[in-house]
Length: 488
Image 1 (spheres, rainbow, N blue to C red):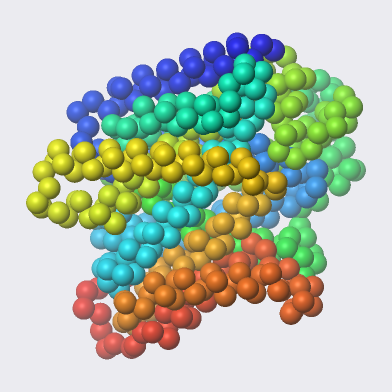
Image 2: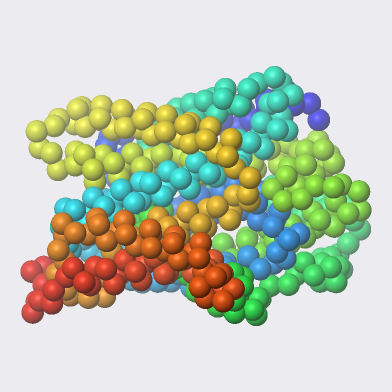
């Protein structure tokens, strides 16, 4: 199919997003940008969060992993489901009780300024890395399959896409993203369902027959039983639960949308509804991965991993399906970056610069600062995507889980220490502990096989990192008879 025609649909889709942004950002202010004036509809937030959580990694990388790892990723998904309940019934009540705009203000309430800014900085580092990895994955697919053929260089592609995202998030912030994410999630799921349906029809298979074939080839293998292996089922399920608690419950981007809902009850309904759909959608993506390998085998296509889905969709499926795939791919791309840039802008402005509490700044000055920070993060995103273009040689989903283990661990330790204990922390030493814990974990991971007899540290790195942070915080704390303010 003509690359020019495909790119034309990308432009049309972007114009639709721009129209939504124009409509939703009318009469907007800083409160609109940061928390959507606390008026978001919980059903829209729940549906839109599916797209944010799935992103281009699930859309491209999860189907690609089936050839090498079968359905073992579903173990992690089951852990995610457990984690969402912890977020809904432990963390959300805390955030609503304190009426937070930035969730990291909890650390300021509980421990002090150093812990607060440390938590915010770890989020900023982690979300920047994670969002740009996701962004790189989708931009790279578009570059290889469309824009290289049009003679557009990778640098120009990255700049154009970031400019598109800036245009529709610059003013409306969270209020706009709640609506655009809903639209993007719809098109992403449409692409998933259409591709599954077409491949089943092309291979002349019912769902049951397809499952039997996948089972015979070993693709449906799900639960790992080797305790020493990274894919041991307990590691994957427990690790998945803590990834959700950390990457959703302790993540400003994800929680910014949840706390934009008016009441705690509606926010909890959003979380549980979203988590149930997430399990079903991830399972369908794994089914798609198996079907793609069956399709590739039947057509003699020698492609695996992250390149499999785009290769099949753009080179072997009808033009109408290719268009739907591209729209789905773009729908996976934008939530990876728009919400991240908005959340990073919010966190940096509120947590690091403290503009909300600065009474010396006018509303106009605050807006100017916010816009400058927004532009700066867009520039950082561009730089990170360029770096990944030159160094990446692994599956993106593997890199993402590794990044999460190191960067969200200190956040997990800080929040767990605050919620589970009543000890008072030496706030000045908190940043030191939060830096030491990941460094020790890295040393353990690279030496695990030799020290622990072929044991491989995988997804449980996040738990280990959080536990080490928790232990270090205990050492620099002391017991008190009562808290000055009741926080939990």
